[in-house]
Length: 339
Image (cartoon, rainbow, N blue to C red; front, side, top):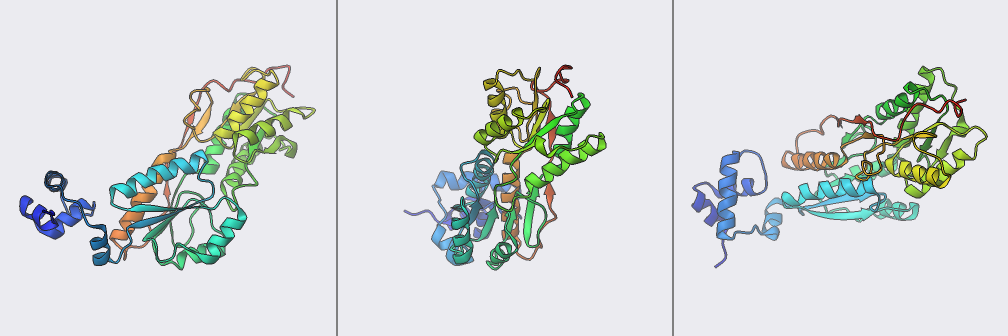
C-alpha cells in the first residue's frame, strides 16, 4: 500500500502541511519536530511525489546553473557544493555550460531555460543585455562571481584585498621586481582579473615601485597558461624575483616552468597563488585562501530562501572571509638576483 503524507502526519500527530514543511526544509518547524517527522517518514517508507508537489505549488523543482567552464576547478567546486544543497531540499539541477562565445550567444538569444527552472545560479558575469535576459525570467537569481548587480543575490570575496595581501607579502620580503600572471583574456566579462590586478598595482604604488608592464603575463587561468606565462617572464632581460599568480592553477604552472629551467623556489624565485586549491598544500604553495565550496553552499541557500519567501527582496551582497596562507614558496630575494 502506498504511504501518503497523511500517514506520516498521523504517525507524528501533526498536520500534513507541517510534514510537508519539515521534509522540504521550510521554516516554521522546530528542529526536534523536524527530526521526528523525518524519522517517521523513513520508517514508513514515505516518498514525496514530485509531480504532485509541482502541481500544488506551480514549481518545477529545478534550479538552472549557468557556468562558463564546468571543467575548471573553481566552477566545478562551486557547482558541486551548490548541487548538494539543492538536492537535499528536493531540487534537481539543469546545467548549461557556456564554454565558447558562440554557445553563450546562442543561449542568451534563445534562453532555453525559460519556464523550466524555479531559480538560476549564474557562475558567469553577464553583460547588461545578458543580465536583462536573465531578469526577464522573473525567477530568483544568484551568482558567486563579480560585484553587486541589480536583481542578483551575490556571494563572493574581496578579490582586490586578497591580491593586496599576496603582493604585500612579497614586497615586505624585500622583492622589488614582482611579476604577475593574470587571466585577463578569459572568461568573458569576468571582473576578477581586473580586481586582482588593481590590488597588485596598489601595493606597488604604496611601496614606491614603478609598475613595469613587461612583468605582467596572461596565463588564462590554467596550469598550462601559467607555465607559458612564467616562461615569458623568465625570458626578460631582468626577470622578476617574485611572482604573484592570480590563481593557484597558474601558480602551479609557474612552478613547473621554474623547475624546467632549473631554478629553485623560493631561493631563486618566490611564487604566491590565489584560491588555496586542493593541491596547493601538496606543493607547499603560499597562497590566498578563499572558501570556494562555502560560496556555492551559501548562494544555493539564499536562492532557496528567496523561493520560500518570494516577497522578500534580494539580500545585500555577502562577502565571504579570505586568509593568507604562508607555506614554502616564498623567501627574501637572493641578493645577486635583485635589481
